[in-house]
Structure formats: structure tokens, C-alpha cells
Length: 358
Image 1 (cartoon, rainbow, N blue to C red):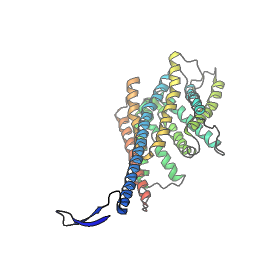
Image 2: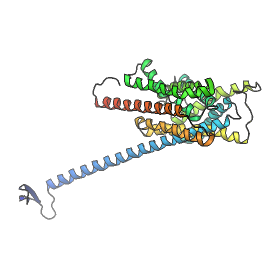
Image 3: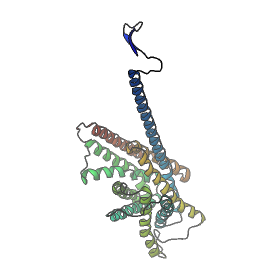
Image 4: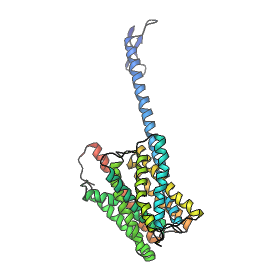
């Protein structure tokens, strides 16, 4: 091997030329080759990892958009069924069908039905909260436009944040509290014309919002302990155990809410649709959250509002008036601002910089 200085024309610098005898590789050349191979391997590995990460995020976004498109179909089916079927029966159908749809997946995936020790009461409370939220929402959309009722329910994230601050001691600053209060102001804009048209029914979606907020809080802990499919099955099973006895007791009572009826041909389609779209949409959301960061997906959930407005107009010829539209816009803006502040807080937390609560 020969090392020799060689002038680099036009630069004034000197480069080192390396010659090897035939059949001989220099130690320097071997080191260069080894370093190049390692660098190339690292770059290729990083590129593949980044590509896979991007693919997962895109899949999560697609599933979340799928949720926003299918969840309003649950509301449409429930509103159509409510024309001839009591609300309690529609609510029961939602959970019975969910349970039936989840059972084959549990068997096919070989999942355990065992409930983690000490979580049975939490699982039961979660199912009851979702039961109450579903019943209240169906009772509301029976007479209210879909968009108006859903907009009121969208205050649930604000309730979750306020409960986290004042009951759980979470670090929430004045800006996010202010955004929550502005969101509640938007709800008043939606409720006011609805109250004038439908009376106290306009306040029923608030029951859904409160119940769903606490449902979200309980889900945070359980989602780390149980598989999503198993969690969905148990939710449907427990809620069905509470719904079906109520319907049996109310049979023949003449109750407009609970006395079950034999559905007509098309009503069967709506009842099955309620359970089907509820199951599919919530599984989409669950798997979306497992593939992409919640900070990426959270803003997409507001896409559900314009979709519900469109379906309400196409199917029922319902469209929010100007005051309701203003309230919906305020709710969306306040929610997106709150998500923006949470993102800033998360970035500052990762950087390790001490920052005041936001």
C-alpha cells in the first residue's frame, strides 16, 4: 500500500491518494468501507422506521376519519328507529348487537374474557355511564336536529378537562379553562333556539355530555388493562344485563320510553344499524388511537359535526339556524384552541423546560 499526497486542482488543498498492490486491500480502505456500510445501514434503518411510523400515523388518521363518517350513521339509524320504537328498546339494541358482533372476534383472536382484578366495578360503572349517555342522546335526537344535539355533546372534552383540574388535581392553566368557558358559551347559543322550539328536551344532550365525560375518564385506566375488543364486549354485555330486565318489567305498561314493541320490517334494519355503526365506529376510534398520537387525531373529531349536519339535512331536512351555527362554530373553535394549548404544553414538557400551566 502506498500513501501519497496529491494536489487537488483548483482548490489549493491536498488530498491523500491510496494505492494498493494487486490482491491487497489497505487497512484504511477497509475502515472506510466499514464506516460507509455502517452509515448506510443506519440511514436505511432510520428511513424504514420513519416510513413505518408515517404509515401508522396515516392509517390512524384514516381510521379516525372513518369514525367521523360512521358515527353519525348511528345517530341517523337511531332517529329513524325512534319513530316507531321506544327509546329504551333502541338503547338495548345498541348494546345487544354490539355484544353479538364482538363475540366472534374474541373467539377468533383467542382473547381472554377475564376481567383484571379489582376492575369489575370500574367496568360496570363505565358501561352504565355509556348506557345513560346513549339513552339521553337518543331521547334528544328523537325531536332535535342531529347537529344541534351533537354540538351540545361536544362539551364533554371541556368537562373532562375541568374535572381533571378541580377534582383530580391536574395541571390546567387559565387559557384552557377560558377555552372551556367559551365552549360552554357556544352551547348556550345552540340551546337557546332549540329550547324555544323543543322545550326542556334541549337540555337532555347535556346529560349525554356529562355521562360521556366521566365515561372517558374511566376508559383512560381500563384501556391500559384490557384489549379493545374485550372491553367493547364487556361493555355491551353489562349494559345489556341492565337494559333487558327493564324492558321485561315495562312490557305492557304503555310507557312511551320503555314498553317494548315488535318492530316493523324496516325498523329491524334501523335497530341492527344502531348496534352495527356504534360498534364499527368505536372500534375505528380505538384502533386509530393505538396507531397515531392523540394530539394528531383530536382535531379530526370535529369533522363529525359537519358530517352529522349533512346527514341531518339529507335524511331529515334538518338544518341548524344562524344562532345554532354560530354556537357550533364557537364550540369547534374553543375545542381546537384547547387542543393547540395542550400540544404546546406537551412540547414544553418534552423539552424539559419549566413552564407555567397553560
